[in-house]
Image (cartoon, rainbow, N blue to C red; front, side, top):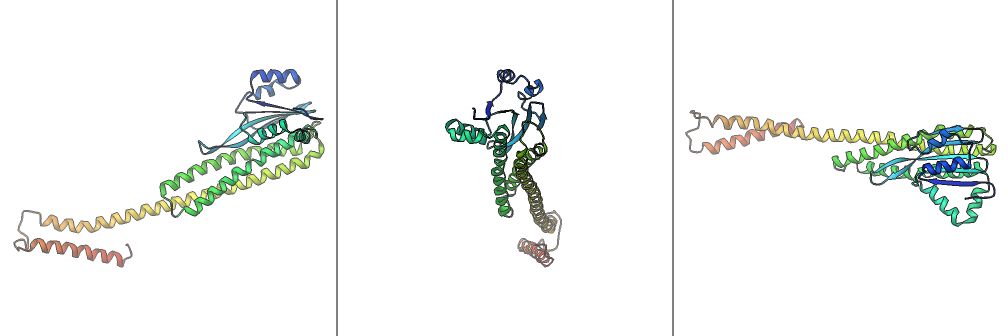
Length: 300
């Protein structure tokens, strides 16, 4: 896809054939950089060569099946008059931009007529902005947990907190890894990056800082909710143990009395025809006295 000043090559699911094509079109690209685009586990980095800038970046995407934000890798080659993007077709903003440029020549001109560094800025800005809907979803989930933490079933609450905490940790790791790359971009002096783009990259850096602050705050909140849930569960367990202990203590003298009168020996009142009734009444009296004592001590 070409404009007046810039060509955009968008490679989806890169293959060795794509790498060979890039080598033919841009023979000065370093072989190690070409090798990196076939790898799916490269760490974020920025490499500068005489004729181009190469970046590897990660952006989060939501996996509804796993209920987890996963990282999606994208590589950039920015050179004189061209931008190359290589990814796995799961970055919706990038796909939407490419489809829009295919059908709208005006959008293509606005995007590609400003130079390679401007086109790269537009793509990067869109990818950073798509982080915020994910953070909004996390904030919404946190608010829901805050509202239901005292009324939810303990097992379900702990599960929800664990799933959300895992997602927050994944987002936090992805976002934090991009900050040094964008910081380097803001300070970068290179022939293919226009000097006036420094403020634009600074604006993206402000956005990524805001995303980092939001996810750090969410991380602290979910930690507090986890502690609260643990406290509530411990309190409920203690309540159950206390009731079971009181029940056991009440049963102890009742068991003792019934065991004594169950022995095959002569005991006071055993010959009385109303002995069974008196024993039952005594058991109820003992239990009542103990319950009254426990209530007096505020153990019940």
